[in-house]
Amino acid sequence: DGELYLSRSLVNSSDKIIRKAGSSIFQHSVEGWKINSSLVLEIRKNILRFLDAERDVSVVKSSFKPGDVIHYVLDRRRTLNISQDLHSLLPEVSPMKNRRFKTCAVVGNSGILLDSQCGKEIDSHNFVIRCNLAPVVEFAADVGTKSDFITMNPSVVQRAFGGFRNESDREKFVHRLSMLNDSVLWIPAFMVKGGEKHVEWVNALILKNKLRVRTAYPSLRLIHAVRGYWLTNKVPIKRPSTGLLMYTLATRFCDEIHLYGFWPFPKDLNGKAVKYHYYDDLKYRYFSNASPHRMPLEFKTLNVLHNRGALKLTTGKCV
Ligand code: CTP
Image 1 (cartoon, rainbow, N blue to C red):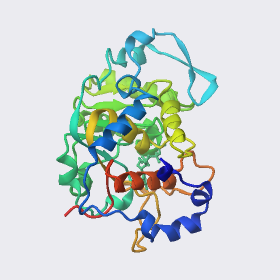
Image 2: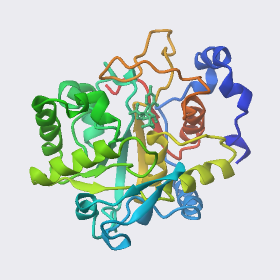
Image 3: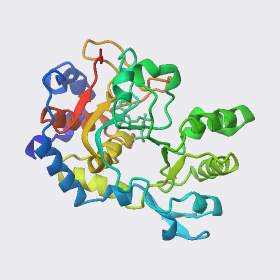
Image 4: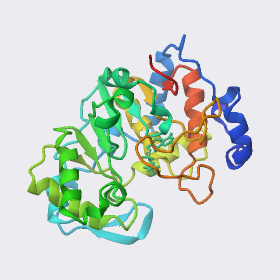
């Protein structure tokens, strides 16, 4: 476990990190990579001490009734009312109950995916997890299209769908969701105040258009449990990023986890610019203390796990 330890100063100093990005600590060879099944089992067992992904991946209908008031997970002073629509979209049982897969892909949103030609390989996994409703069709050669589980922070409504201001934004959104068929749409609705209006609009559109997508809303304890696991392993994250959350959950369901699109750095190992997202022009300050995440630290941790055979991290080309 000592190997997982990463000092704070390493994370806080952007210069150092960028210099290090060109050096061996960020290098990981995919050739000759082999799964370490006993380590995979050990990690699953350890994570189970903190959370049970089958249960914590979503609250269920029987836990609430319409009108119940809950406190936001990261903003305990503020509250949310469970609306009729939200209640009707809560699953009866966990959407991940008894689901087990040989191989899974967790796809992050880094621009490192562009020109990777990883689409076919990603789609060949038994279960594909994606983040923040990232577009796929226009990028299929690099990112694939299979999406069995996809996350959506409420802020996506504003960022990618114009805040639903006009009909065409709403149509675009409904079209995107209809492509998901009966995949799981995972909406962290109880984290912080601010997105409740967006969540309500999303819920209303799903109901009105009778979309088949299977909605899930993470449990109130998930984020703390995930953070607790990583802190115990001496990885001092502030708040786990969606990508790290997905890897942590996936350890329960997947024997082999392959990560793509994880590269939270502005340049690749050859010094070429890398977009923050493969699909938009959002800028991100990876090393800012204002950011809720510590993605470079998360990356370093995942890299260590890659080198130990616990997961496979692909940041290069697939063919
Ligand atoms: N990611 C990465 N490198 C990037 C961009 C994203 O490693 N350049 C990973 C992170 O684990 C991130 C995930 O891909 O959580 C999904 O990306 P994104 O949708 O950008 O997540 P954010 O909105 O930035 O952050 P979050 O949803 O985690 O709050």
